[in-house]
Image (tube, rainbow, N blue to C red):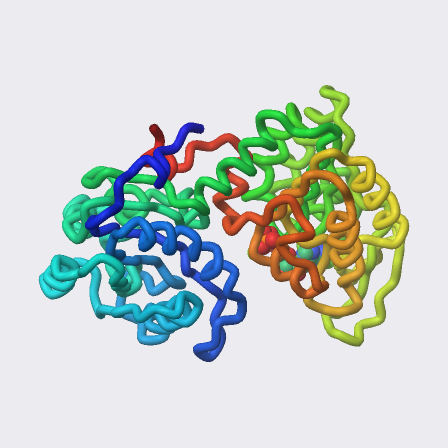
Length: 393
Ligand code: ADP
Ligand code: MG
């Protein structure tokens, strides 16, 4: 994928409209994780260093096309301002006349931040008039919101039809890291998938039948696969309507002689709590009323051996209900094994990143941590990401 990048433009004296993904987890007004804020800093600096002025926009949460006080972008502007040590003028709008006027009057080096783009129903509709309004604010558009790249919204797609559009440094880095895995991965390639839902993950599993050498499947996703193998998964979280999908995947893998590792043993409990009594049993030993909540000890050992042998590892989705201590061993030990391996490792997914941080790991322990969960999965699946299409050379 050949993107138009920042190094191709003369930024001096230009007004740049930057689409960032500052959709950080926030609780009671406090940012819980600032990965996405940090991730866009290099692009902001590059734009300012180039002599441009900057108008930043982002979505934040799910306000559903209405103004929601708690989802205003003010705290995001404050956080950015603190990291940059520069003042940012937050405005209460996106496409209003007063916003246009303020944008016109920006001087090089000055930064303005728009209101949550999702306060406007036109954003998700990719409305052309709204896109044009946004485009009127600036001379150039830079998109660095990899986490939203799989959405064709006004701020990620429509606006790029009305301005010269370039990829920011984060999108460039994400695309390079993920492309290298698809194009020339160091073998053997190990795909580790867990988490809750099969829908968003099955496409990647299928695509990787031609790329991966083996698959390690955990989390609630594995429950659907165990059910597909005929095991009674009791009260476990699984998707009954996706059993056929899982069966078809297993059949395709078999015919391609791909190795799929499902849990050989599992941790079960009859309640989800921090002091639940957890038992390690074989899949056939899951009794009525029990929930499968983690990988068993034997499975963890088997998975770790495969991880140690891999040349490339792609991991998305926790191996169990890691939020509760009795069910965290699978996720914790798999994270540790990936961090310790010499393989090129790629990790993505909100909960997966939350887990690796919880266990004391960071960017430096992995080849690449993707800021996009859904976007990473769709990219690896080979889907066309609408926002990236607009940045293609
Ligand atoms: P990511 O955000 O990394 O893409 P997902 O959102 O797909 O991951 O899934 C993460 C969630 O799946 C976590 O909240 C985790 O507790 C849950 N989960 C994993 N395994 C199980 C399980 N066996 N039963 C219930 N929930 C599970
Ligand atoms: Mg998640």
